[in-house]
Image (cartoon, rainbow, N blue to C red; front, side):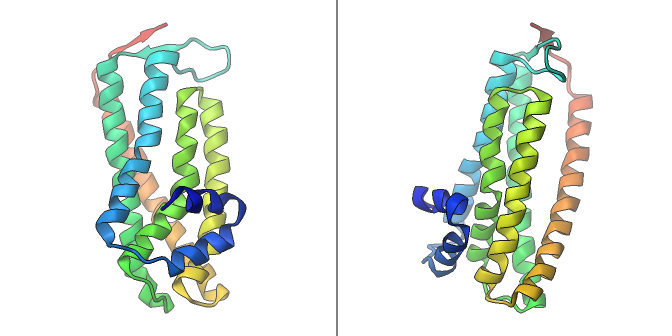
Length: 201
């Protein structure tokens, strides 16, 4: 994904998806590297935000800063979870595509995952100001646009009719929801078992 392609998904999504469909890809490894780099945005932002700014549940509430060790452990776990989720989504799309008559390589499916997840990953910058209501609001907007990109891109990239593409997108969203619930459960478990190293700022 180039900077030009990244910008296109925000102001010309249909054209961006056509470019993705016709783009010459070098292999799955290249896409996985891009996914891993993009996944650094929310993890690094939350690390900086929770150690420098402090997080709060409500506006005007008490700010809680995490120690560097606690924040680093959380950031690494969060980063690995994001990488796993993105990789699982890409492989799931490739696995399901034949059912809906799709014609895309694994590289193309991984790139579709990267394109559609880009707004969510970029919304990770909101972690620099880790106020719960703010992060949730930004995340919901990003999720809505990522869903729009998915419904826009699947018929184009898979070269299938829009009606079939709609059903494919529903299946993808279902898999994504299952992965999200699993990651949420794992996050709660890790958070509850982690030694509390936070201090009130």
